[in-house]
Length: 560
Image (cartoon, rainbow, N blue to C red; front, side, top):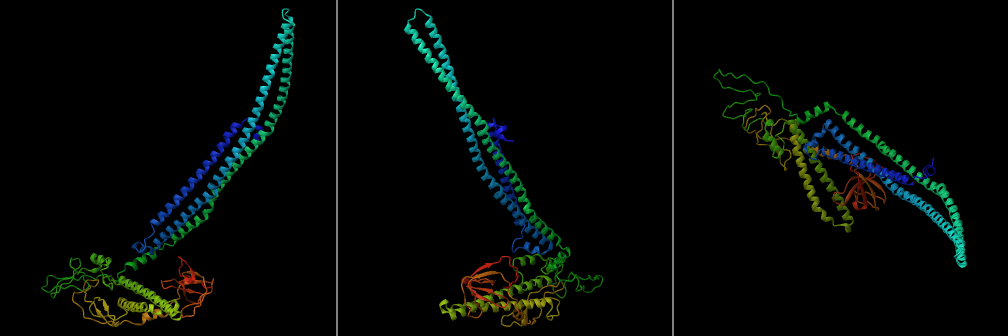
């Protein structure tokens, strides 16, 4: 089955067919290109969708993601990001493996097709030229034969006419002989041209055209194979990402299975539990007796007595029960609440105080780290005066010491309030009401009661001021907290660019090219804290190392 033998006379149709094949290939390229654009658009929309529903940092919405159901939703959003990434991979692979390759192949195919059909047209023009030569030779032979016949007839006519002179007859005879000779020459030329044309024609239709058409057939078959392979690649690109997409879906399923309704219910209790006891029964008030009406301590309503105005539940007075006052909630949001959070229910107050203590302790740790770094820098300046003036850091060290002392007093103050809420200290008054103490920086053991009156959950507090009491705070809790510091987690790695001899206390020696772990980055003092193993850690100049921080570090510690 060969186009050269079967389609020897279909040059124009083959030219149209091969052009159609190239058009099909270009149409497929356009299809794949639009598919890649759809994949990119879909991935972008998925990423925007995931970003849209991600919790905003430092917002109330972020706090809501402590529940298992919302954590599962957050995991779904993260997996959707990875899911979108796989569609980007599909787009990239289709672009590189199909679109780019086929576009380059189409250009080569066009050049090859142009070359083959140029050869075909050249062969066609050659055979047409040979045919024209044959036709010219044939017409010339035919013309010479007719001229010879006319010359012969003219000679015979002159020879038979008695009135014609002998010279005219001889001239007619010579002309007839000349024409006969020309006819013979034309005959010989025509015969030679015909023989040559037949040879050229045989070679054209049995050699040149079959060879050219065979090349065109091979070119077309390669195009067909190539588009088939591209379609197979089209499917393989999708198939390659199926396992990863499956893992994304598995992670979403795993997150969904981690939803724990009991745990979420318990977290709601922990988030909103006030610590109050429900109000007791309301006593009967007998209005038939001419006696002073009283209300029990457990009543939610209050009456006037002894010239003292007590708050009444549901009234519009300022003595309304504080858990239900919107004004207090608003003032809390605006930052106008008391420093000891005494406007909150006991359980919520305890949490806020604990958070404040933890926050202050973290601030203390940061200040202490800065002080240690400056101390080490001062030691380096003392031993190496050319590196800097040791006296230049004294003022900053003094400031850090004052800041640490202030923060410690703050911690003691808030720990005192926390101890009061948790019941670690004896009651300060027999009156059933709470008061916030104000710590004096000069005397951390004594606190003055707050003059502001507060109500109990059942609304039985009066508005009279309580006597001042004192409260002692254990001074050992804070000290013990910093005695047993846990080792800092690694936050990245670093490579030593130069050799450093750590001769001062707190520094560590490193060799050029050595890889170490970073446990504390440069805080602006020019020193980075690193660790070689569990027992060897210290500071090195930041300019001596190249740091690679791990953004996803979760405190995992690995030692060389």
